[in-house]
Amino acid sequence: MIIALKQGISRAEAEALVASLEKQGVAVDFSEGAAQIVLGLVGDTTAINDEALRANHLVENVIRVQEPYKRANRKFHPADTILEMPGADGKKVSIGGASFAVIAGPCSVESREQITSVARSVKKAGAAFLRGGAFKPRTSPYSFQGMGCQGLDLMLEARKETGLPIVTELMEISQLELFEEVDVIQVGARNMQNFALLKELGRSRKPILLKRGLASTLTELLMAAEYIMAGGNEKIVLCERGIRGFDNFARNTLDLALIPALKRKSHLPVIVDPSHATGLAWMVPAMSKAAIAAGADGLIVEVHNDPEHALCDGEQSITPEVFASLMESLHKYAALEGKSI
Image (cartoon, rainbow, N blue to C red; front, side, top):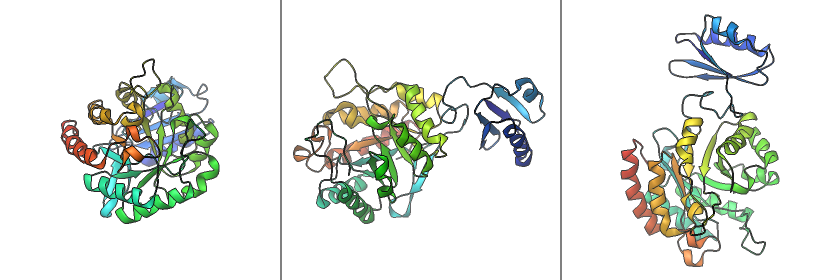
């Protein structure tokens, strides 16, 4: 249930109403915008009297929310969520709002030379974040599984040198303590419905990049975000990374229609992964531009200094030179959508 209060209501008046609602057995999320306060009720609201609320002199409107996700719902939180954190060179970086955030780096960390070289090049081209996998979930048990803790250390070294915040994937709860210094924790597509992991991340206060599952619906993605938010962590970025389709010309099918749908249903920022979505480096620039037109808040792109010899996903990784050229184009496309990189 959503309760929109009248404009001009003081915070003290709103808090008094919150206290009376909590006595009726519901949790209340307090969202204070520039001109209006919105209260979101979570729990069993069947006993809440709609008519009595509408008659309250503080209340402008009462809305029953039918969707199973509450905290991730735009009705619950009308204003866009914008995540801010320290970036390179003393500047703040944002995901959401008027910013178009670009996260770039290799699929997996392979060596100190590789990750620092890529980090320098993507920073120079204008990326706001550095991505790189230390722990890699692979379909084959014989494929490269990542460098593990050593890979994390190398990511931190690259951050120290370039100042770029780092994004890397967490695979299981037992690894969480190793991610204390990581800026953004990525939950991969295969873990999107690992509910025990999502609950644990809800107790964290680190930003979470949540990737859509291989065959998950919009509602399932938002319910996964709801698991994290129910624990108190609202710093979530949703990521469309392609879903399984019938055709096999590309690795997956990039579902760009999901972007405006998510933006309509949820207040959370949405980014696109054109690398995993297509699996083909030559398709990444076109899909990156299309993502901006669809309303995305950013990209996560795989960049490798030597894709032909990459230990993981070389076929979908673009070179630093291609990335630099792509970034020049993206500035123009982002400006058309009222966003800046």
